[in-house]
Amino acid sequence: GAGVSQSPSNKVTEKGKDVELRCDPISGHTALYWYRQSLGQGLEFLIYFQGNSAPDKSGLPSDRFSAERTGGSVSTLTIQRTQQEDSAVYLCASSPPGGSGGTYNEQFFGPGTRLTVL
Amino acid sequence: TQLLEQSPQFLSIQEGENLTVYCNSSSVFSSLQWYRQEPGEGPVLLVTVVTGGEVKKLKRLTFQFGDARKDSSLHITAAQPGDTGLYLCAGSPGYSTLTFGKGTMLLVSP
Image 1 (cartoon, each protein chain N blue to C red):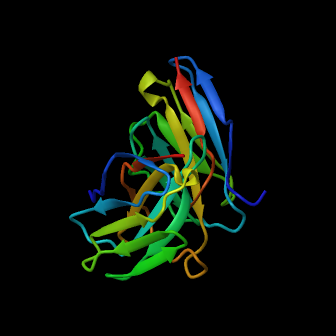
Image 2 (cartoon, rainbow over the protein chains, first blue to last red):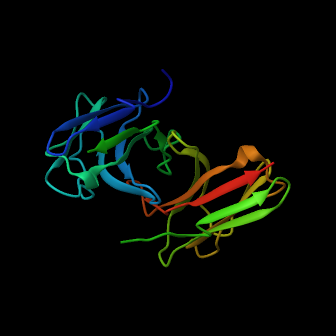
C-alpha cells in the first residue's frame, strides 16, 4: 500500500500480559516514530528511529516499553506486563529522507492501534 | 522541554462561520506544522510553515507563522461540516522529533 499501515487496529488484553504492535512505514522512508495518544491528550512521543543510527528512546515511559526496527523498515513496539494506564491509541509515523520532502520532518501517520488493557 | 499550547481546546460552530485557532509557545521552532485528525484515523499533514511571518493558504484555510517563530494560527473561512476534526500543531526544533500540542477539537454543524 501507499501509506503507513499498523496492525492490529484494535487490541484488548488483560493486565499483566505482553503485547506487540506492528508498523509498516512508507517504502523509502528512513525515519520512523511511535507516539501514544490518550483521550483528550495530544501525541506523546515514545521513540524515534533514523536510518541505522541508535534510536532516540527518550520518550519511553518505563522499561516495560521497547521497540525494534528490522532492516530499516518494519517496526514492532512491545509493551510488557501491561497496565491499565497503558490503554491508548498507539500511532506510528514515517518521514522521507531529508532533502526529498522530509527536510522539515513532515510525518505521515498510520491509522493507529487502539490498545485496551482490562 | 518545549511546549505548545493550543486554544481553544474545543470549538463548536455552525456551517458558514469563520474561526481561528491558536498555537503558542515560549520556544522558537525552526518549523511548525498543522495536522488534522479525524476519528479512528491518524493525523494528516495540512501545512508546514518555516519562515517567521509566513502566511500560507490552502483553499479556505489560512496559516500564519509568528514573526518570532514561537506561535502560529489557523483561520478557517466559511467552515463546512467536512472541516470537523482535531487540529494539531507540531513544532520542530531541528530535524528529528516533533513536539505536538494537545489540539483543538472543531465541530462544524450543518
